[in-house]
Amino acid sequence: MNTSTALARNITQQIISSGITDVVMSPGSRNAPLSIALYVAQTHGLINLHVRIDERSAGFFALGIAKASGKPVALLCTSGTAVANYLPAVLEAHHSQVPLLVMTADRPARLRQTGANQTTMQAGIFGQAVSLACDVSEIDFDFTDVFSTLTHGPVHLNVQFDEPLLPDDESDWLKGVTPGSYKAGKPRGQEELEITESRGLIVVGHDRGTFNCADISAFAREIGWPVIAEDPLSFPESIAHASLFLTSQVIRTQLKPETVIVIGRTTLSRSVNALIKSSGREIVIDSRISSVDVKRSADQLFAAVPHLIKSAEADSEWDKQWRNYSDATNQLFSTLPQWCEENIARQVSALIPDSASLFISSSRPIRDIEGFASSRTGLNTFANRGLAGIDGNISTALGIASQYETSFAIVGDLSFLHDMGALVSTEKINLRLLVINNDGGGIFSTLPQNSVEGFETIFGTPHGKDPAKIAQAMGVASFTVESIDELREKISAPVKGVSVVVANVPSREMNAQILRDFYQAVEKL
Ligand SMILES: Cc1ncc(C[n+]2csc(CCOP(=O)(O)OP(=O)(O)O)c2C)c(N)n1
Image 1: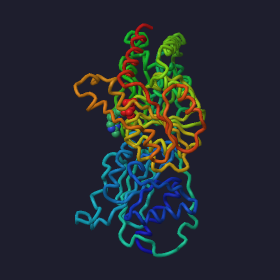
Image 2 (image 1 turned 90 degrees about the vertical axis):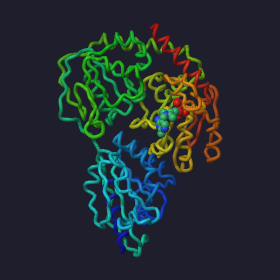
Image 3 (image 1 turned 135 degrees about the vertical axis):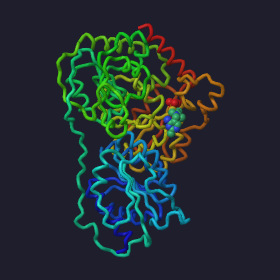
Image 4 (image 1 turned 30 degrees about the vertical axis):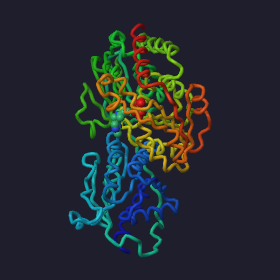
């Protein structure tokens, strides 16, 4: 057997034994030994092999599968620029600690810097975004370190394949290879947290510091303080609309907590971050403080959910004050125009059926859901908040949806255009993709740069493209809606295959005005 085939088979056997079930590969010649070995493994029912032409999309698709399955996912591409296309997804995976096994094919080391075709210095190309980078040439490479490091985020295997690249034997090399089982599990930490205050607050970032909802909810119940969640759709007990009523300085002063426990990162609203800053004591719980966010500061830091020592009971009057503001904000929603981005976020997040997954893109959609949606349970929500990119959003949503019966995603029009190539491959996936089309980057109209000269050219970036027509051209069913009733009908219809619903919403400037008016109304609560 030639060396490249032997190395590829060794890698494939170890992938299967490690419990990895999904591999996303892109076509190329240098990766042929591994592509062929993985294909054979798929035909034996030992792995699921997904093929994506575009490596950037492949990276995010793998990220989505890993997020939804909670297991590592492997990637494979050829040499050269193909490798670099993985970087955005690798960075996102690093900052959100998602386990990706990134395998890139290379020529043998002796051909580097010789002018050989499609050959660059790709070993170590991901720098600090991976926790381990190996430049592999030995046939019997041992993967023990690779799999143990994977639990902390992406790992890069640059694999040197020499010619011949095709198998030269027909041995039954998968005989006796059985799928292993992957155990992630982030157990409760050994550390203790003493609670002496009765008027505290728990703030849960959208990414939950990589912990699961059940663990966080149990911890929050034990303390008994009010909870505000950037993702109200995962915490039914949370106080909804806090990011809205906390825009009022008066309310922030009244609701200043003695202590705040922040789980994960809070990246969505200045109002929530201002409240956190004002509190007497800040405690952070986030597994990334030990590897990714090593300079994060707070009065106390925990890398795992700590055990509680409680010497104070939560104040029920305090909880009531929070709930009163939430209820009062809820009353103001009747003043919103029916057809606006905020009401769409409200309606859609209530309509999506239980057990579905929901991916929410960066920019306005995730903030509108944070502020305007009612708290609920039953959904499995996801977002790329590691670096909050508007790239790879459709690919991530498709990867997540590949693990669910029914899935939804909400993206802005620029996020849609950025990753529309993902619609090339949509096989066996049930995803309804809602595009909030405000013809450009709506968030910028809500930021201080909204009045600078040249705003539309350098921030607003209107494109005049119709996402529905683009989807149609890709062979994806698409619909355009311009009223809440039409939208409700399209969201409620059974989800079969991939479809795109484009909501043509009022202008970005009008939306910014709606938000300003709302904040003014909050000031009067
Ligand atoms: C890859 C990447 N490029 C640029 C940005 C900066 N950015 C943040 S929001 C945004 C506009 C997003 O527009 P859209 O997706 O239409 O959502 P909207 O703001 O209208 O809600 C841009 C360009 C980013 N976050 N990620």
